[in-house]
Every structure is written in structure tokens, then in C-alpha cells.
Image (tube, rainbow, N blue to C red):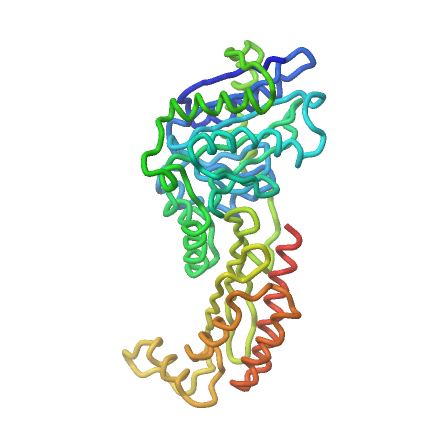
Length: 387
């Protein structure tokens, strides 16, 4: 059994997407199964096939940083890609690939896991398609049918710019972005983080090629793009930079906004109306458990007694108002802190949350607020179950 290897080195950011798409679209019964390896020449942002780019990416920020935004034809979330990553894509004729997507991921991702083991790292596959080292994601992947082929792709990350990744996400609040940044630090890794002396790109590439050959029980034969594949890539080059392709998906606004950081790791924000105000509820979860939570209370205009004195900062007035006895529990820092402290580490399930929220409400006579907060948390749970 032979597999064609296209080790293309550094390519344009556009070709780092359109090349493997072109190979997949040009696949026929007589075409060889193919593995592509490449690195983009500049940073860019890439969204998954089912994503709404306008909703999920801060396009103004990307434009200000000259970060192109592309949409790929395989699933997954928003990723920041650059020259510090080695892309791999396995492109198989459907007859020669496992029918179940989970089996296809296991087959393909076994190769980078072998490579990490050769580097002295204990890596594991976390379903459906993350590779983790010590509980942190070090390879993300995506896959599906593209054109006439089954495709699975991912990247080996030598260094990762968490700050830019957190900034380019379209976040509904700055507190939400703080949660995203914290989750990226806790749950994302790279070779530079895991190894005191990261290996050269050439050594990692050679190891990955060897690992793919062993994993598939095949001989990898170096090759080049065919004429029909080059023509298909030229067509896709035009399509992938078009607004019609990038903004093809439009999703209606939902009550909950979420970002996936790694397998089973999410940041979510919901909004709730409360007595004399409202609140944003931001929750970071891992495997269905609340890792961190913030509640940002906002006083309704007109709920503050009296008029603002000339030149007096509205924040001072709100602080003075919140400190008065009998005011809403969530308008006092102690009320917020006591509730969030109870929620951290709790499964995102009503049977566990209700007693804790009730305990908080009993202590502060805040039962109406408690019911609203619990309802918001259940809305977040329902949103995650639907992803």
C-alpha cells in the first residue's frame, strides 16, 4: 500500500487551506490517497464550515492587525494559524477510509500521538478529536467529507499566541474575554511549553512522516500536485477570498454566547433580568462542571434614589447606593462573591445547583434573584447540550 506525500514546506496562507481542499475535490477512483504537510507564511484566522464568521470573530480587530480571515470546508471552531505550526491533512478516497468519523479520527490522530511519544511526551486522544498532554490540548483537528474525499487535518503547534487568540474572539463582554484568556492559559499547550529544548521543525516533520507510515502500514511516496489539482486550487483561491464564501453562514442571535476552547471546555455567557437591574452570567466549564463563574450586575437607570450631583461620577453614586441596607444582593460585592464561591466546582446540573443557590438566597433574602440566576444557568446547560 502506498500513500502520496506532499511535503510542501512554507506556502501562502491561502494555499495552506486551498491546497488540501483542491486535492479532495479532484479525488477520483484512480487518485492516490494523499497526506499533505505545510506551514503558512503568515498568521491568519480560520473558521469552521458551520461557523458564522461575523458573529464568532472580531472582524474589526482582525482588520486592524492585518489578519486575514478564511473559512474552511471542514468543521471545528475558530483557530489562529501561523508559521509556528506544522499542518497535516490526510485525504482518502471514501472507500479506503473508515466509515465512522470517530474511527477515522482514531486512525489519523494515532500518528501525531506516536510523534509526541517519540519526543518524550505522554499524549492521549480525547474524544472526539483533541490530542492532549497533561490535560492540555496540544493538537486540535477537524474532519469530514470535502469534495470527493474523506479529510482529517490538524496542526502540530511549536508556539502559540494565546493573547491574540483571546483578542480575536468576538466576545459579548470584557469579562467573557478574561474567561477565554484564562481557559487558553489553563487548557492549551504547545511543544515550546512542554519541552525544555523543542526539536527542529525538520526533525518533527521526519518523525511525523515515519509515524504516518507506521500508523497506516503504508509506504509514503513523495509526489507533486497534478495539473487538475493545480487548476482546482486556482478556482478555490478565488472562492475562498470572496465575501460570499466567508459569510455564507448566518446564525440567529441566541440567548447564550459560547466559545469552545478545547474538548469539553467552554466559556458561556447568558443574560438575566433581576429586581432593579440585570446581570451577565459568565461560566467556564470543563466536562460539565463549573470551573469559574462571574456575575456582572447592572443597576437599572432610575433605580437610584435622587439626582446626580453636578460633576459627581455615576460609579460613586451606584457604589453608595449598593452599600445601603436592603439593596439588591447582587449590587453588593459580598453578595456576588458569596454566590460565585458556592458555584465554583459544582456540576452544571439543577439537582446540584438549586440547593447552593437556595442557600445563598436564604442568607440574603434574594429569592427572586436566585430563581433568575438558576434559570440562566439551566439555559447555559441546554445551550451546551445542543452543541
